[in-house]
Image (cartoon, rainbow, N blue to C red; front, side, top):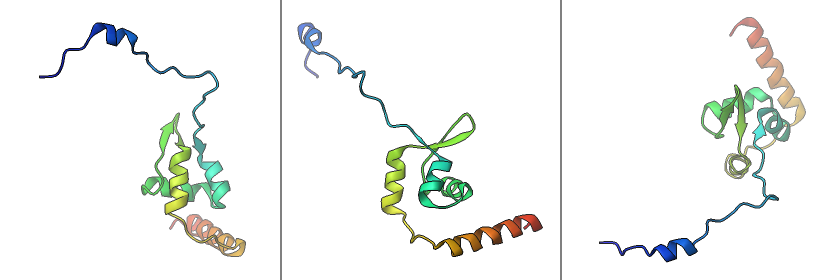
Length: 101
């Protein structure tokens, strides 16, 4: 049986207060992550949809917590693509989308 709680002890306990100077880090937008990673926003959304990058929706837009993005950067990295390779992949994807594939 747990020990009884002393009312005087409870009265002396204070809840931690938050400082006015403290503000939680702002969540990141898909476009920001795309710019950081040098990929398209669609690539970032595919990471979200496949579960590689945890995110949540706010008003129909995806948001990523900075700590989740930092974890993604540490664990799910791929070598950066040179611009000509990245551009060729974007052109191929655009052509496929235009054809309806």
